[in-house]
Structure formats: C-alpha cells, structure tokens
Length: 103
Image (tube, rainbow, N blue to C red; front, side, top):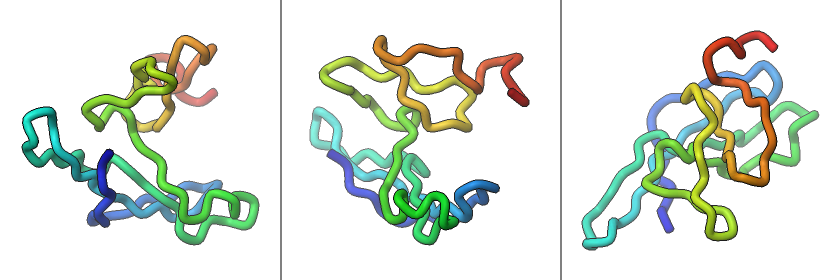
C-alpha cells in the first residue's frame, strides 16, 4: 500500500471543481522506495452536485506499479487523462482512445 503525499499543482473540472494531487510513495519488492508522481487526486471542496466525493482519493492505475480488483490486474483507461479502472467485468466503450473525443 502506498502513502499519498501532497504534490504541486491542481486542475479544474467543469463538473466537480478544483482537484488537488498527490504523489503515492511506497516500496517495491526489494524494499526500495518508489514514488508514483501525481498518481492520485482529490476534490477537497467539490461543487454541491458532487459533495459525496469530498476528501476521497482516486488513483490513476496507469501511474501505479500495479492495481488489482479481486485479484485481477486493472488495465488503465486509455489516453492518460481519465482515471478509469478497466477489468473483465467492465464493458465499454471507453473514452480516451483515438476517435472517442467529444462523445
């Protein structure tokens, strides 16, 4: 398990508001320190429609060494912008791959 450490920068979502980012710090199999830069984010003060996500932390699986759900390795949602966790139980189509912009 990794420890989230506040990171520089923020972004803006027109639906949820301002996102703050974290680096995720952990150790690898050999016990060496590993940092996944900007691998997590949160909305500390989201818009009212998204108040339920306030303070929760989300992870970009593509920036982590490995993420699993019920033992299955997660495939990150294509494109690097979205934080989707894709497994065999999730059915697309998914935004992020070429030709999916704007839908």
